[in-house]
Amino acid sequence: MFLNKPNKSSIIQVKRLSHILIIIISALLIAGIYTRVKEETPPRRLVRVIHPELRPYVNDFLLLLIQNDIDIPEPDVIIIDLSDIYKYAGVVGIAEGMYFDMICVRIDRKFWSKATDQIKRSLVFHELLHDAFDLKHNSIDMMKPQLEIITKEQFNKQKIELIQYLKDE
Image 1 (cartoon, rainbow, N blue to C red):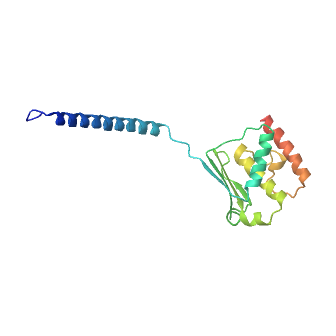
Image 2: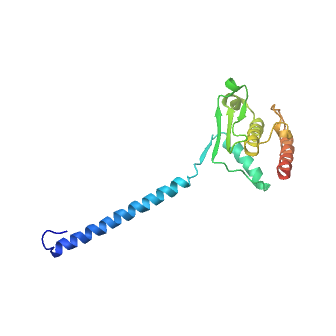
């Protein structure tokens, strides 16, 4: 209510204020709806950490799956790293994501630095198979619990067996 008769400029100011209030209230309503929707559908949190020294072997694993039309699991969390696990766990590789919707492979740093290229490849494949496909020890030749020194030809035979096993699953 005006105490005096409103002049034209005061009416314009009131209209401007009302427009500004409408914009602010609309913005707050939209923000409230957006926040509620955002809370109801949490965003996927993707974690992808692959140690640079392990990346070529991980890529070989993925390429084998792609070339053979094997579906590649895509969990939110993928961590493939070097660490000092032997002195704690007495193993050179560990798949911590087995039976969970994640891939978390750790390879012992000291072992890795001394391993041959073929042993590195076998170890990475072995641990990734645990986490990506929940394969247990001794399910196929590549999943023996103890690392063996094998030739490239033997590894190629293991890959053929692996692909057949995954396709039959």
